[in-house]
Image 1 (spheres, rainbow, N blue to C red):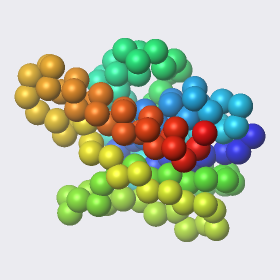
Image 2 (cartoon, rainbow, N blue to C red):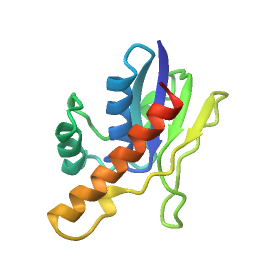
Image 3 (spheres, rainbow, N blue to C red):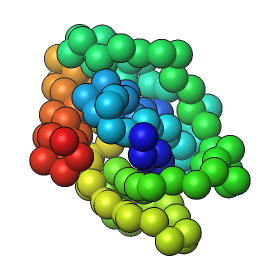
Image 4 (spheres, rainbow, N blue to C red):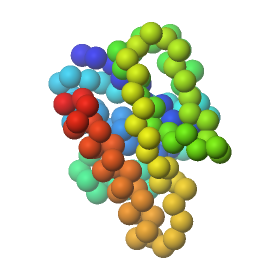
Length: 136
């Protein structure tokens, strides 16, 4: 089983969704964990709601620092944060296969509940598509 580390800045939305998707869709091939360079300290409720809406099991996710995994080895490293000026995408310097899946942050979405749900669904769909194309 190959180990995957999914990173973003806050570890409250995109990386948590990618972790859950990889663990569900690729469970015979990969096991994933997620973390952030500046963890938010909570998982955005929209993340949990979106995963549940799409039938992806949610196993008590939590926002955590990438430092929790300093001593672990991974086979694959995936960043999901955008390279926006206001966001610092973490880097992983160990020799490992690296992928960058630029995904807009749904936590930054504004508008009514439908518009915010749509932003989470778009991020979910983008991540699911990348997993289907690159990991399956």
